[in-house]
Structure formats: structure tokens, C-alpha cells
Image (tube, rainbow over all chains, first blue to last red; front, top):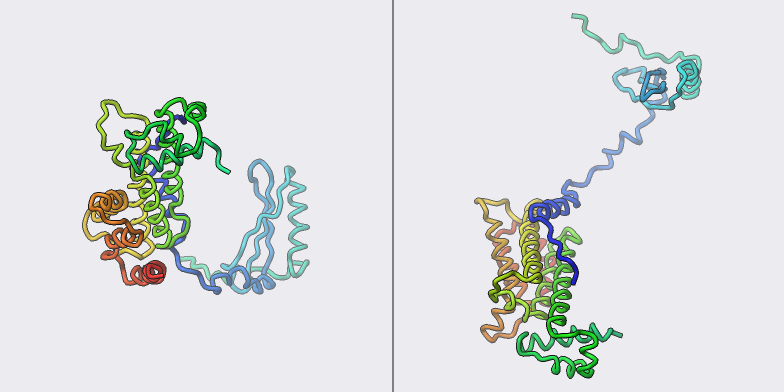
Length: 119
Length: 206
């Protein structure tokens, strides 16, 4: 005869709760909810800003895409990382020029558009 | 083709159901299977070993039903589990009275059976909770309402077949299901009622 195994009642109760939760109770979403993925036209009018910072012992290269019309609309993407800071800066520059619409960097996010209050 | 061991177990279950566990002799089991008593002794040394194997198989069968919990998130899932419980208790109705016997020390199969029953209770309660979240059942209006209901459902599921034996009525799956669902029905929401009619009640008459 097989040895008897019994699960603790409280643990079994929790297991059942977990099984109950495997089905989502939320309502279906709308297609409009996915607009954030499809609506990328605004990315054409963005200033691309490179950002190099230390991350997990390496120099991480991030690019920041900031809308030139409304600077609060931006996304940040991690591109690559490098152990050497100079090489990281070099890579950041190359990646920025590759990603930007205008390689010369004429598209800039103006700080005035943020309408900061200095009071 | 079944193995001889399997045939012996099946014949034993049949005989235990018909005559009760204590009154069945090895000779009868051998005759039922169609083998000699010597051959039977080759597979199982004595009746205790047969009984232990029968218990093992029955408990495995019961665990298989427990494993069917929430295979899909509809009321039909519980309905199919009720069907399986019905066939289980019908097939093994010799089984329940064995656990009412008093033993000074608890036997292993009794402990296993108790564990199964505990799990079954928890499952029923958990399923009621699931139905509430899904909107099939109205939220609990008083403390322990569904705790008590789950106990009642368990009693209906487990003791319907012995009750039929006791009263001499033939047991019927439709009546069994009605008895169990009848306990849950008063607590249905409008959505639950609609779902119940669409998925379950409309199939009862087919």
C-alpha cells in the first residue's frame, strides 16, 4: 500500500482559492485600450535625448523621446550598456543620431513649454 | 484486456456491493472472476489484501473526481462533478457503511477517506465562493450562510444513494442532481438563474 499523504486543510483551502483565481473576473477591454501601442505617430515629432548612467556596474545607454509640442509626453528606452564610460557615451551619440528624425538635432524640447511655475 | 488483478478487484467491488464486505468469501470472488482459488491466492494472499487494494482503488477514483475541480469556469463544471460523485457513490455504496464502524485505532484507509472528505468539503465551499465572485450567487447575507450550505450540499451528495437504499427507492441521477442544485437555487442571482437554465436545467429533460 502506498504511504499515506495528507495535505493540511488550510493549505488545501489556499490551493482552491488559487484555482478560483486562475479565471479572470474582469470585463473584456476595448480596442481603444490598445491605442497606446498603435498610436506612435507622435514619435515622428520628438526630440531624442541621450542619457548615460551607471546601472548594475555598467554604463547604461538610454534614449529619451520627448514630444516637441508637449514635453510631458515622453518615453524612455534602454538601448544598451557598456563597461567603459567613454565608449558608452560614443554609443549613445551614435544611437541618438540613428533614432532621431533629424540627425543634426534641430528638434528640441523647449523647457518653456513645460510652463513651470517659479513661485 | 484487463489484468487478472484488475478483474479480481472489479469482481470484489461487485460482490461487496451485493452482499456486504464481511459475507464475501474468497471462493465467491474466484468464481465471479472465473479462476481457481489457487490462482486467486497467487495474486492476493488473503482477503485483507484484496480489501486493501479495493480501498486503494476507490480512494484513487475519488481523488480523480476531486482533481476535476474547476476544469472550466461555468456552472456545468460543478454539474459534471456531481454526476461523477453520483456514479462513484452508486458504484461503491458498500464503502460508506464501512466507515461508520467503530475501531479502537483508526485504520489507514479510514484516515485517507477522512482526508478525501475534508478536501471535498473545502472544495464545495470554495466553489460557492467562486460562484459568488462570478456573480452566479448572491453575496453572503449572514455569517456562515455558505459554510452551512456547503455542509448541506456535501450531505446530499454523500448520502443520497444510501437514503435511496434505505427507503427502497431506485436511485436516479436526475433526482440526485435536482436534490443538490435545489439547495443552491434559492441563492442564485438573475444572472445565475439564466446561466443555470441555459447550461444545466435545459439538459435535464433530454
